[in-house]
Length: 530
Image (cartoon, rainbow, N blue to C red; front, side, top):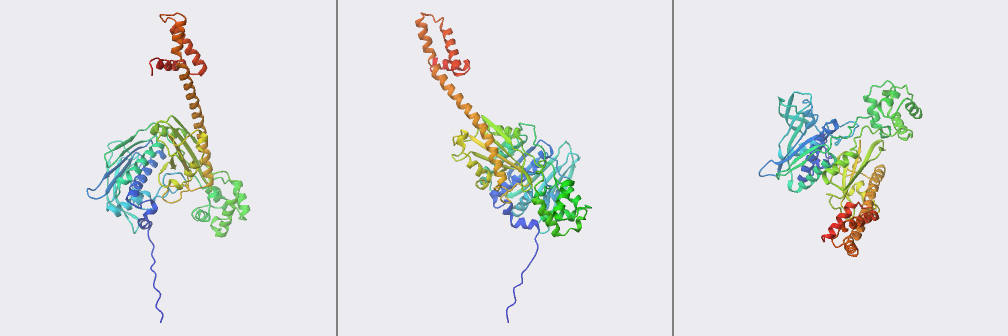
């Protein structure tokens, strides 16, 4: 008799269990990366709760040692944002893939799992729950929750809850979680993240307190906020069969034509009729009666239709040139700073905007001898890992900086910000942007545009330096010429010396184009032997 075949065991797992088992996918691969990632996720949420809603952010980040004997750290982030409705708090922090970000609008986070994976990591490494304090502007009470995530059921476990009346007009959210970390190895990365966040949020007050007792304070220097993003409909070029089936099944449209006009941007009466005619579908047909085959034909027609308008940029929130320049000045106090925000472009039906800023001189640190120091951002988030595989790095390396009068190494920083409703990250860690042709071209054009302005500045600076050299070479002879002429003229008491010096200074000034007072300074320095 043949042996019986082994029986396979099958079961489903919850999203919480999946990310508990495969937390590396979300960036929680080790204590170093986990501590950095936890700070990043909480800060992103805090900024989205403020500037995206027109509130000038006040953000406080505290990392403190939570255990004398073990490497446990308590991370607390407080914001002055819109807060959370109390009935939403347990789901927002206790259910993986529950979020307010599943809409077509630019946000810093997209998946609704970053903070939750941090909470899961804290549960498995320290066993301690997350604590949340929140209140909204229109509420009279402040609410407190202590939560865990039920990994098997992917639902919140409320350990403790409470509320109290406000004694001041406070609104926002405070989140505290404890997790295993490695501060000694993670601190430089976290400090870099906070600093780079401060660069693109010059409109925010940021306080950062470390376990070493250090306090970093980045004071607000501008009151202008980036324009807030708006929710938009999907663009027809980004449609696929599954999206079309969801629209058909979940909508309440009387006709296919109405479904197209109300579900997508850029489709009006004429365009909808044209699409349906090409697809061979009656415009008066009920959408529920459409077969998958008919939907697939309609999808293919939409993807190949050449007359759609470009996707709207209303869903995007670019920083803007003024904010970029203010941020670079805030941190680096450069002698030259310039920025550009490109016009919106699109790839695969997704709008995107590229922004570039360049800071030169001042307190800007010296770059490598290969390419300028690069600050990468996507949807206002600093990207610190995987720089070598990022398309922006490749573009910066490929530019001939000599033609812009930049001799590397040099005190130069290039800031590149890409905002989109769908940034093409290379992985779910969201630290590196893929090489998309449309994005590559826009990054290159934006850098070249700002670099030309830098070249103009450096060219003018070189000319000024040449003028100053000529002044020095001419002005150093003025005292000697004055002395010689006074002797020739028999001016023993030097009565005419002052007049002669003024005349010679005037001649040098006219010959070089340097103001007379600057020429005088050189003359006086020669006279006293400086």
